[in-house]
Image (cartoon, rainbow, N blue to C red; front, side, top):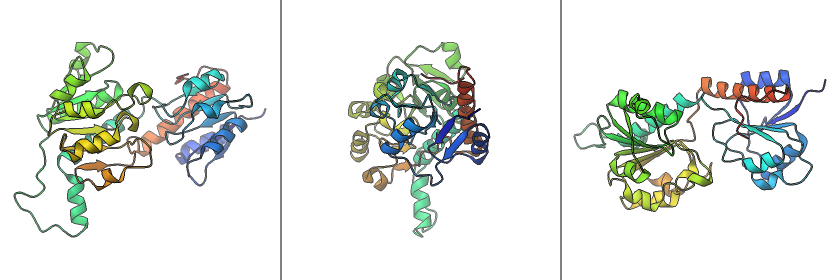
Length: 323
């Protein structure tokens, strides 16, 4: 029996690639360089399954025509706003993702960013590595205390809850949040959290604002100039969700004008491109999309993709189907 042909668009953990090789006729991107639109289109025409990551863009145009061979897109990641899911579905293509396994690691990165920007850790490390540290002094790199402050969370799903738990029980922070749907107050209490009616209510109350909502059209530029103006002047923004949730031009303006005090970012609007103005700012901590970057988590994500495409080609419903 002929094994399904699959294309893996980037390098994955070796253990996962080994399983894919055993089960499928697998092609790997040995150079680990992002595929362009032409290459992704060719993949959809030539392979039974394409396994993309968040660095791959699959807009509607790639799914046009009648020569599409791909029957399943097994996304390596929770978010899938980089895939035109409606166009894929219209072609009868199943789309899956990898929820659940990266919750803790992403919440940890959000905490890392919060602490780093509050305590000016990035500035301090750059100064020390440059040989510019002249020794301890009482007024050097004074930051912001985290313990006991109020943190606002936008999006109270798995990661938002895990982040709330760390903030409240780890640092004694007051937690408020906005979520599109109502959360049972007893459930929120488990995380020391209180739901507020609007995003603006959360922004106005918070010393730190952390984004944990999906990306895509509905939430594109959710954080815009008006909402930055609603935040406290001394507040910080943390984003480990998706880059398009934040209007980067508005963020830069808010930072330049002192509308907010700082930001910690792990995701960007047009990754891997990061605005030069952001890179030049001392009050911004920038990470290269490390939310799920642990050996355990990336392997678990890959194995979820394996489970999804294995189920599909065996005629079963993929466990993590989104379309």
